[in-house]
Image 1 (tube, one colour):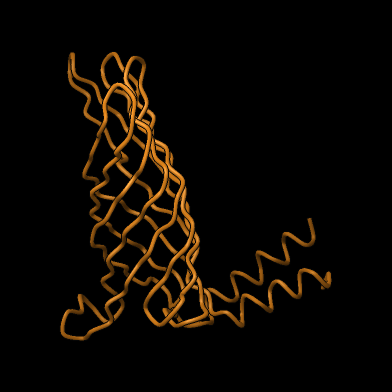
Image 2: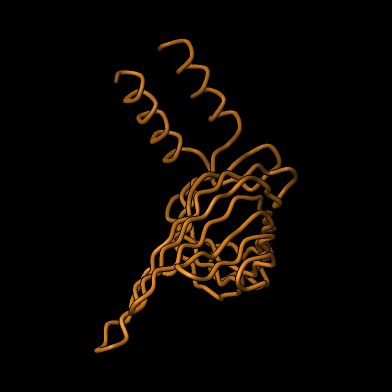
Length: 193
């Protein structure tokens, strides 16, 4: 328990003191919350919610890649759908002042590929999942960004339907960590300090 509280305190300190970095060697960790909402009308009820946790490593300035997973549940009148996926994503950040939304934000473009499925009772599509779309990260602090991402997802595969697609507005957050600060946290945790 002591190690967990030490790790949380160190992580909070890093988040409040370091600068948001999209430079080579740094990384991001967070999640997108997709399609939270619903329609509740007589005879036509729909509710959906999902989460996409991800970890990205900046392989060069303003370019991050890493693993991602996604889970989404949708309930419509009479049917439940489960969307799942495992794969990788890539992001390109645009820090050009001429397209800047504000001094505390950065536009980005995200693409992903992996194995994905959309399953419901009596119908399913499982196979190659592809997605892409533009987004905006707004930095509340130098290390914490709130994000909006408009994304198109396509699943090509097999099942009762060979393709499915959807457009979604995803809201989420990311924590941007400098490589040296993250390394110090890991070393301190290993040494038991």
